[in-house]
Length: 221
Image (tube, rainbow, N blue to C red; front, side):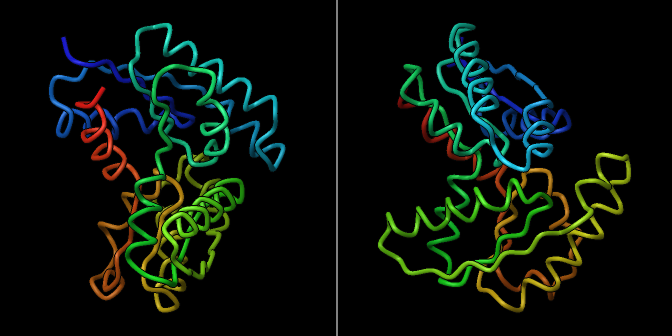
């Protein structure tokens, strides 16, 4: 049996996305999913990532390790700071879904757009890009765009409205920047439906880049 991977999700619908990518890019890897939507719900309600939510995510990561996971990926960008804080408490790698995307964005341009559907995701993503740029010794300017109403639309069962609002936000953002980062994994599907002129610059989403990173890391475990 291959290495064992755990995904921790705060949006149930992402399990199928990461299952499909894992089947394609991680053949032979044994994986399981942990889903707790209340982590994101409580973060939205508090309008910040609270200490209580960070502790609860840590417990899930510890549980994944105890279940036999040899590596964990947390697929929610809003949980990013909690992922980093969890690392000293477990003996296995714990990865942020958005780290590979941020690293590629910094390498792709000095003016970086960040589109998000939640304020609680926007700030951690901007902070991560700024941190990665500092690590790489690069000067970057980040332009943020909150696609207001998009998250509420998808939660209420209107994915078409979500996609429309995200596309409108990207239409505003693209002319201002050299590369765009989609702060939430759930936004990735919108890129495929964008007209060609809106894809003249890289529009990066996290799921495939994150699983590609896993494909690099897992053989070294």
